[in-house]
Amino acid sequence: MSNYHIKHLEEYYQVYRKSVRNPESFWEEIAEEHFLWRKKWDTVLSWDFKKPEVKWFEGAKLNITENCIDRHLATRGDKTAILFEPNDPKEAAQHITYKDLYHRVNKFANVLKAKGVTKGDRVCVYLPMIPELAVAILACARIGAIHSVVFAGFSSIALATRINDADCKMVITSDGSYRGAKSIDLKGIVDEALEDCKGVNKVLVVKRTKSEIMMKAGRDEWLQPLLDDASDELVATVMDAEDPLFILYTSGSTGMPKGMVHSTGGYLVYTAYTFKNVFQYRENDIYWCTADIGWITGHSYIVYGPLANGATTVMFEGVPSYPDYGRFWDIVEKHKITQFYTAPTAIRALAKEGVTYIDTHDLSSLKVLGTVGEPINEEAWHWYDDNVGKRKAPIVDTWWQTETGGIMITPIPFCTPTKPTYATLPFIGIQPALMDENGKEIKGDQADGRLCIKFPWPSIARTIWGNHQRYKDTYFSAYENMYFTGDGALRDEVGYYRITGRVDDVIIVSGHNLGTAPIEDAINEHPTVSESAIVGFPHDIKGNALYGYVTLKETGESRNHDNLRKEINQIITEQIGPIAKLDKIQFTNGLPKTRSGKIMRRILRKIAGKDTSNLGDTSTLLNPECVQEIMDNVL
Ligand code: PRX
Image (cartoon, rainbow, N blue to C red; front, side, top):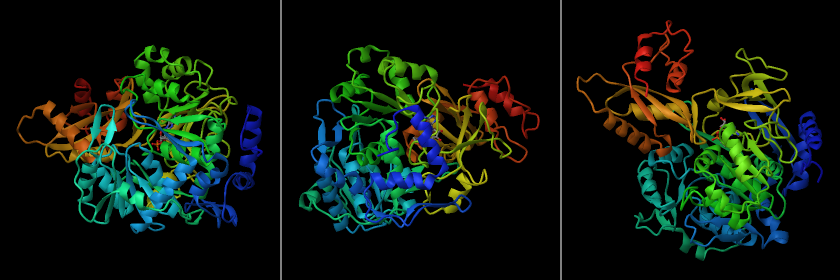
């Protein structure tokens, strides 16, 4: 059991050194001791960042669900695996034991099989945060189908794009979803999406809101009667360690989202090992991550990482503000949560409400607090530490990405002294590097550069679905022999990292990655819009909000700007989803461009952030005159 549970800082350094001196033997030992393999690997690691190609545990055979479910049955069969807390606090919580989960996953997997889903097929899962979402993805994994979960807040157009890109043959959805006091017609969104998805021949529908929906004969079926008739036993399909487990989309610098492909063996090993250490998970803990399974955080740290450790993982269907802003604390108290993992944007929104909701709840069960998704500002960090953790529960500020599959830079609680706004030290096995603008590594401490990773770790995404060239161009072309993260970072005098934010065309709004290109493409579809540019500007709760600069076509007509703003946001909602709506839209006669025609976002970003002290030399622009006009009319 050595090296699996790190308990003090000296041990961290020892294990870290071992993991980077000889990564193969380090990960081999972890994999051998803690997981269930049908057959061991022939090679621990082979890699080449030039191609790029990374393979972990090649030749090994396993099924991830046997690791997440079956192997716990003997010792933890009656332990709660998934603790479901519904949107409505009056509805009873559900305790799904490992034994229940085993039967439910088998039944679901048998239904998938009966409907013709086989190994390697892609299944799109578009569900709210209800237990069926976790069961559905595990059922796919059980039979070797590749799940592609699409966050159930994406619009029908965004859903259709993702279904078609992965060529999914089936969609699993629900009649509707609850979000606080609202309910959303999910099935209607799927119906619209499927008008453009010819490859989908089957839709399985979970009954949740009991709303009236259309069921297309021959295509749509209610799930429950199928489950009722299905056997609750099924032999898991044996997979290769390098077989794809899932696809998950993330935004990029072009309109098309990137379908990140994660493998089976390496992903299992890394998510399980990080979960255990980053949350200092112990057998009787009740762990709660507030993310949605539609994002990587939910995949790795609601489903796979916790279940691989036999943990109890909470799934919450609702929102932090319903029925009031005390809901999170209510759940912490009710279920005696020991580890609580959330996003800075949620912390800021809750902090705004003061401490009245906190003071009425007993939060003494909390041992570890986590944050993820965006930089946490100092004020929010202290509010979390003082009021939620009462300075007794260390905060793990975890930096990672959809592409990395698991946590990469993070304190280890009770080991690493924390420092507000710093994600601190690389996790075991992770070798970060900061690069300068000329492509050279900046050695030593007190450095500021672009964050890269020098050596593969087991859960690195293996490719972009259907577009390996884009994978290479995006992550492996900026710096030789390095994985480029797209983030900037500082390294302090003790080697702690602080992530400063994206250095590419991705903006993080409320912890969600949004590419500027897809939003601009959506805006440009408006008939009166000629051109647009999106930048982020600081926002108290969201971290960043979106600011759009829009030029209109010369039509000679005068248009009502408020109506136009509404129409533009409506198009964005339709094409992407409400998360991508703009907070501010400024109409302008021109956008600052370089002589080669590239929009100078740096200038626009500064103006939107009301920081015009140092705009740099604008005289070399193609159209310097527009800068003053934009500054004069800034919102
Ligand atoms: O910019 C970094 C930011 O979120 C990006 C990854 O987003 P996504 O793929 O959606 O995954 C989010 C959940 C893992 C990163 O490139 N980010 C994530 N965590 C942090 C962060 N920025 C600062 N501090 C963090 N702890």
